Image: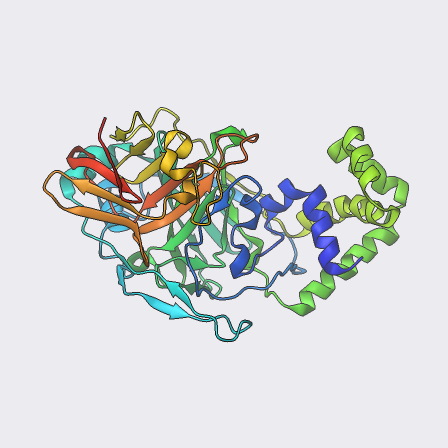
Length: 429
């Protein structure tokens, strides 16, 4: 079995574990691949660094982990200061015109990187509508010289969007990382188990401290809390050498354990019924590798996965001020928007004429205010949002009718009069 086939095999039998331990990295055309099994994602950022499919490990001794509580806010002095800084126009990544890029593997290709603008956060809206929903997490632990502290949480149960602030410190310095034009951290050294993107808090970041905001969409239906930990990529230098090392480790596992032990491990992990199903669909060689992959992944977790996790349970009653349109088909909060295309017929056909209610069919979205001004969230080569994600209502839904958008600013929902989607205006209920 080739390396690529083996990685796919592990993705088949160990998907949840790999998601948790971050044993895969996607290239630019497969960002958030692990989430695409339950949601389709609108292309949001072109031109970022191309990342190859890499699995890597690093032989290091496991050091002790000490978890402890942190008193008070450790990054900002108050919730108001935090929200104003994160959603304001002083982040250092606040304005960008349209730019273009080409794929070196596709000669003659040209793609558009959208423009965006951040705006100053209105103090009264921050104080009244957002800051009261910020709560201190105050949890921290140290592992291998790094200290991870999760500072604060803000969550909106209506749109299921929120933010986490945290910092990673090391007196010997933080491993180099990249930051794109929006402030997003590429290959960031902190692992999150919920969909979202980490952005640098530049004014609070130093050579020995990386401060960040994680903008996320929480999925309570997955029956698990939010988990934050130190990523193995903090200690790994990806490359062919480590890919080769992992394959050597897999061969060692096959020599160390009998096939019977590998089969027992697979059944213990997934159950007899799943084993029978996969066996019926696979060759003998494939099934052998699937079984050994369970033992292999366990070994990788034992050696390289951070044993400490900070667990966070968003308050499902935390509801930001919001307004709705078209009988709650669209909901707008100060930080985000949730759209359900199910009953919006103009979103039942895509640009190619294919039928199917889909939030992804919303190609332009503008929020209108009572004073006549507008906030262009998504337009032609414009994206004033941290993320735009298309997803189903439930596991059985094949149409992906929901669209969730995290704004790149705070808005006053009391001034919102309507939302214009693909030229169709939906007024406040």
